Amino acid sequence: MLRIQSLTKRYPTGDIALQSVNLDVPDGQVMALIGPSGAGKSTLIRCINRLVEPTSGQIYLNELELTRLGSAQLRRARRRMAMIFQEYALVERLTVMENVLSGQLGYVNFWQSWFRKFPQGTVDEAFRLLERVGLGQFPDKRADALSGGQRQRVGIARALLQNPNILLVDEPTASLDPKTARQIMRLICELAQERGLSVIVNIHDVPLAQQFSQRIVGLQAGEIVYDGPPSGLTERALTQIYGEEDWNPERESEADESPALAGTAGERQS
Image 1 (cartoon, rainbow, N blue to C red):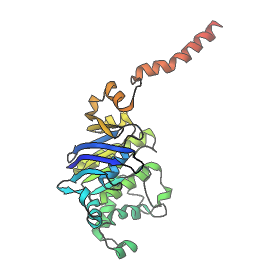
Image 2 (image 1 turned 60 degrees about the vertical axis):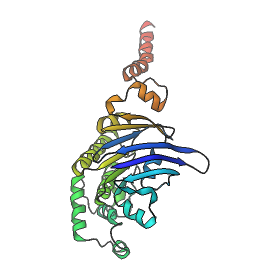
Image 3 (image 1 turned 180 degrees about the horizontal axis):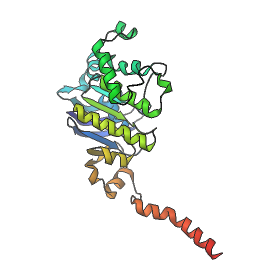
Image 4 (image 1 turned 30 degrees about the horizontal axis):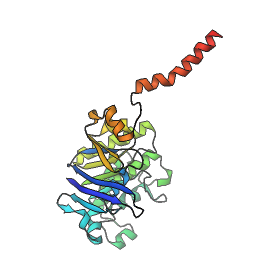
């Protein structure tokens, strides 16, 4: 269980990214975080693992209060909070396997990590994860030779090798084509179910969030303005999150087609 209480982030400029956010994420739940750019989605994810330091409030992972941890304790706690990045965050010159094994760097000592010496059990698990994410045939391929979807799969395998309690996923589909984006979201949800993981996904694609998440939280100017099931994301809720817009796809489609139809009619008359 992840619990966030009265979380606020104010930058030195005075800008407020998050305002008294309260949120509980049960074990095994896939939650999509949506909202316009600048709403505080990435800041919220990064406050959880303290890549961004909150200004005030508390964050608990089970019974552990993350906001009170010192640097050494935080390093240990981060093993339980794996992150999947939009830009993959792979080391391009390393192989797929080497990138996946970097998910265990928080568990081995300096010399083991320097010489890339990992326990055989860890290596075996890395091979199993590569098979699970569909990259079993590419362990020795360099990361810079992979497609975007393949890179994201490496990032997923690396995150799972940490054996985390929660996955923090920051715009995992932003650089992917629609088919690959659906495949990646489906894979994340399947793995979360298999492992009983909580997942928070920062995502701009609202239909994709509705299709794959169990719960949607909408942020606007650092505040939660919607928290509920995908089915409850009505036009009114979307307007509250994103502002005034015609959210009816049929009307939008008709509006897009009408100039072309008018032009065709004019051509027939002439």
